[in-house]
Image (cartoon, rainbow, N blue to C red; front, side, top):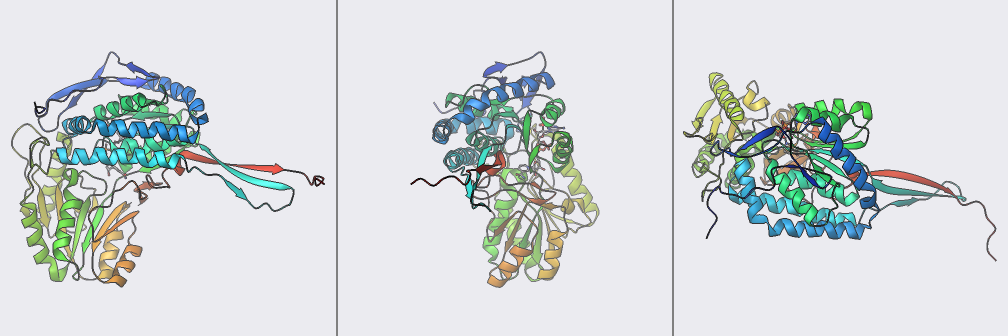
Length: 489
Ligand code: NAP
């Protein structure tokens, strides 16, 4: 019998510390954002349990780091295979707690698994160096060693991929980890950690603590045994963790908020631009850090683009992520929905025109109809803030110089997209836009093989690609005096 909609078996409703399931006396409910129903609960743990988790990771790490790279790679590959073997269940769990359409959830599980396989492969390529020495009697070697215990903190918008993008390289490099997943989406995280242990990752190496973010974050950022914080989430929280980590001089990887521009020049293929705009804006109901937020359309094609974009948006269908054909799930919670409604209201009061959407759907879930606002400008929060919802805000521009200036007039610098055919322009604009990732004539840029990350307030460091494992390694330089020595006869 086919599985019934939104009836999904949950993993243990517990944290995982030192290879044991841990509960407590206080609990936090987890909701299905499509219905508002409580689907389960997780323990509300705090500082004491986080310290225990750090102790477990610190204890498990040396033996793990001492294993050969090939052994670590084999176990990561076993984790990858287990995740794929549980793809259907994991995707349904993800849709249940996060809301995204099941097709997107399945794609996220594939994406999350791809990071595990990629870093299984990279585990075997953590090379050292030998540097030509300045004198004949010395040899200079550089070792790459695991950075130490990692505190990983992840958001709710990609509850699987944001975890494997950190944990797989950490484990590949030989590190222990304490993970604090977002409180809205703990079950996907728990399931992934469980599968990692089933695959052979030793008990205590990967620990997961659910609960109040502040005390957990305080331990992770101040305990001297934690050597690195790897955070994905909002810029405000990232800045706070950065400051908290200063006294123990931790290494930091920060994947923070975006506010991606999406530019269409008059020489672009307009239909391709509309397809790319739909992809870049509405994936995960607009709740993606690389989502297109501000649409700049060259004046001569502005009316035609808006007309075609609105026509394409009419095919979007919002509803439960489990329902066939649904392309837009709920936004994560009531707080997010109210904020989006306020952004729309403010923009309209300042002169923006509403072409479609703009209202919440009736019923229990937190749904906002896909919304198109045109004639927006930079004085509006819908343009200057990260939108993080299914709202496209569109405005015209005159020329290349103007649009580059507008693209860069943001503290965020995560992703940017533009559509053009002229090759010289493609190079000029790609080089001039201040962002860590640029999509040219495409609305899809995320892949495990490329370095993911931002500039300016969008963060520090890169995840994925061959650079992703470097963040979990330290360099150690060894200077060896071999003496002038008697040459062997
Ligand atoms: P968030 O509010 O910053 O939360 C992210 C994580 O930080 C959650 O686990 C949260 O825990 C935790 N947290 C909050 N306050 C904390 C504190 N004082 N100490 C320690 N941890 C704390 O962000 P979000 O709303 O979940 O995610 C959306 C944001 O993430 C957007 O800005 C988006 O652009 C960004 N993002 C960036 C990337 C990237 O790769 N650059 C990828 C995905 C998302 P609780 O859940 O318990 O509050």
